[in-house]
Image (cartoon, rainbow, N blue to C red; front, side):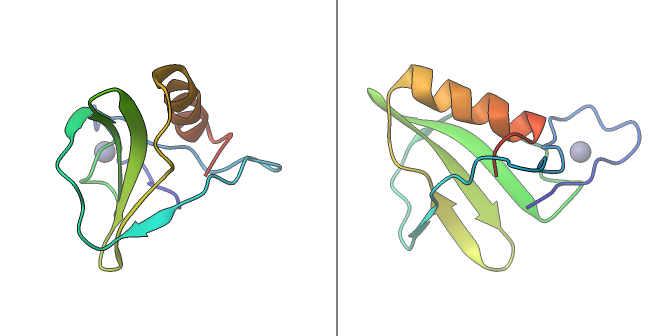
Length: 94
Ligand SMILES: [Zn+2]
């Protein structure tokens, strides 16, 4: 999913996925657990919000798509999720 950036918006935005971008695994979340949001993309420019979240010692990326709902990657260690987060912002994963 792509969040098109509006001119002048200071928020973070994902780029259009590049050819061969890694497909992350997204599990639907019916009842999202409480977590701490460490970083997030802009939610004003498009219909998809990505959040880098922490559950104590485990980390995941949460994707909120209106109106379809919330999904999340597997919970992994920090170094792994940081790689996914960067790839998502750069268009190297989706
Ligand atoms: Zn924006």
